[in-house]
Length: 180
Image (cartoon, rainbow, N blue to C red; front, side, top):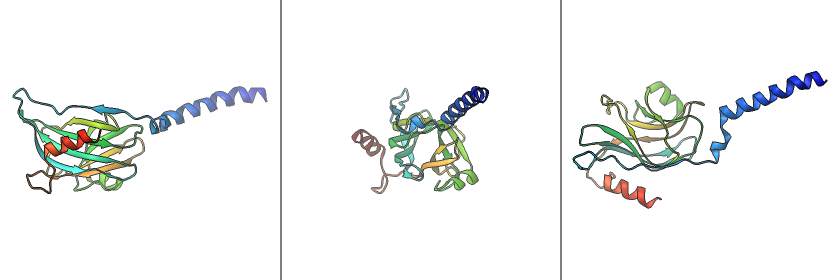
């Protein structure tokens, strides 16, 4: 029996370590907060909102605003403001080639561009968009857990305009500041 225990204990410890690494349960209670400023070009001209949308929850509570800005140097960024979601292992920000990213199947079937690892599950953050991204094709943002292939939340994007129905960049920044 002692010989069996000498083998079973290290194997059990290894399995526990692998399970911990795969699920990262501490991330369910540990938040990562970020507070990035919107980039300002050397000309100090304001970034112009192109598209915007509100996040809604899918598998985890998710809220905030996703806005694509055109900077004065011609580059574009995706900015998340007033943003909160659950933390988790290997969570990424995707631009999805669909009008909405309402479920995992839509994201996987439509195709997506991975903008990188989510910088924080709380706070304002920026993601650089590649210059050749076709915004008429990539119409939604997904907060995606790669490890488990689940969609935490999504934001369908709509063109920004000066009408009262759409959120202006000043309102977005104001909402971001007041939600802190």
